[in-house]
Image (cartoon, rainbow, N blue to C red; front, top):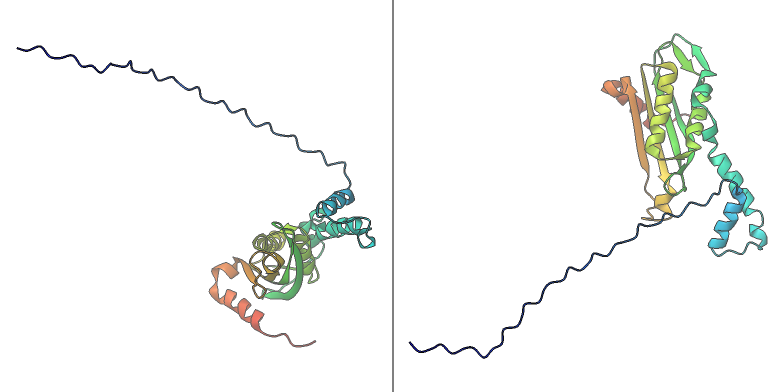
Length: 225
């Protein structure tokens, strides 16, 4: 058999694959938070105004940091108040087991997400079981919870739970109708929107007729006194 001709193509050595070392990422160094506990609230607001690009020498801003600090203290004063103690100061033994309604209680609070106001009306009803609450304490109770950073849903439930714990009535109902500036002056900017929340406990939750009576009475226009 004829000899096979050798190929003239040189056989190149196979290159070895070198392992590429994986880059090691240094752990992120967490910067310690600045200790602002000793900084006056007024000075914090001055810093905010500076960062907004304002001129603190303007006469209109001369006392603004102090005014804002004072206003925020008032608008969040509910943290320093005990709702249970307020209700305990006006509980009375009364032989009455029909519905008690206090409606159209004005409410102003701050949304905890943007610290912008939301405001509206609170309607409260309960069916006593031996004890009633002094009427003026119900608007006071609303203020205690409203003068905090809030969401409307939690505010509604907190009012209802406080009444339930104080007198253990047959039932409690709370309805809040409110407008939120975080929806009206920023974000989606819907001026006509409103939010309604409710909390129904006891008889108002279990008995549809009782709940319907309450809602019907809310829709009725009050006569002038």
